[in-house]
Length: 158
Image (cartoon, rainbow, N blue to C red):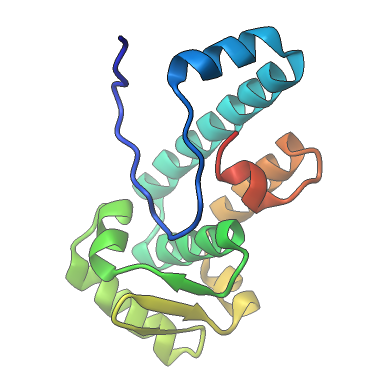
């Protein structure tokens, strides 16, 4: 049996399916359509990882948090997102207190509301204006790989 070298972390609540890796591999090998989806997803994921790495190295926390909240919103297709400051600090590579300070700035600006693990985006255009250009770059890549499809569907996995 092969083991993955990575760990998956569920970021937001939702539903999922599970399949044995051997069975999935067999289906991907036998179905050209499934294989194409897996390859497209891999390409899209690599683009996101590269863009996020550059973003984390170059952009201020406020822009990165704004980008991250918008991306989470796109995936769950809701302005209401359940995420803790602790979790966001891990995703952004900063201290939890930094997330608290920046989230408070976004709340004071009327862009979000948050309370104990619940974040609500109340001014998406305003939040987009605070996000760095990485949000739109990643969004554009996802749309091109999804063939104009929904961001949430392909962004969540194959």
